[in-house]
Length: 144
Length: 144
DNA sequence: TTGAATTCGGACAATTTTATCCTATTAATA
DNA sequence: TATTAATAGGATAAAATTGTCCGAATTCAA
Ligand code: FES
Ligand code: FES
Image 1 (cartoon, rainbow over the protein chains, first blue to last red):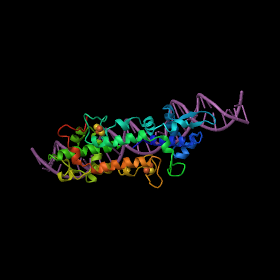
Image 2: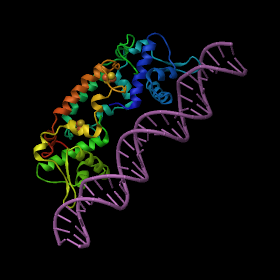
Image 3: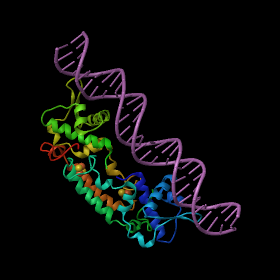
């Protein structure tokens, strides 16, 4: 569904948000451990998220990554996905035609549109805050 | 969503089915032209579909690919996807945890399950015959 | 029976994605 | 101010996916 980079990005953002809610700034090293991702690769992805204003970074000793508490309920899953995978989730054709196109649809267009719209809605309504719920109480996991 | 290989596989199967309905056996060359895919790569994918008993091949001069007319309404999109991409659509976790797992769900599990079940249902109920409809009358396209 | 048309299958090549390494830059603090 | 801990970013490497090439096997037809 998503690229590996995007998966790491989502998990990292959830972890950062979770810690930010407790006013903890977190390091790349800590993130990579908590989400079980390769450190250097994760660094690249975090850079993208910083550039897209989804997370904040602070350089230097005691530096790390964080998100404004106020933002955590405002940021939507769709923003993270867009920052890393672009809009192909929205514009791509299920059968790989150059773009999805109502006027010249592929044979699975109608079926796909329906599911993709549901996916879109889900991505756009799921907030970062929502995704952090459950982590505390061990209801959900970022690694296994 | 699907790999390129899978996209080519689906399109190829639809085209073969469409021609088989008119009792035409089709060649690799013809298929690759009609679905706008690289010929040699498409050959590999067709081999997989043959091995999975989704399409039939006939070697030699006048050979090619075809599907029993009776089968066309019975073959489901899910079979094609499974033959090429395996069951990752069904068992994969949205955030890339080793497998999706109800007992130790990732933070987006509930949201994903719902969409994935819809996708699953769609794949399992969409028949090859259904996907060929519309090709005739120029309502749907395999290339653009 | 030979030649042509075709799929099959193995080896290989190109591209994209994923991952690593190393240096530069920045900031805290001793 | 020097040291240390951190992110930023460029270059490179490894792995996976996508794509190509070529010869073998098969079948039809002349
Ligand atoms: S044209 Fe293929 S999904 Fe819309
Ligand atoms: S555990 Fe991640 S989707 Fe089910």
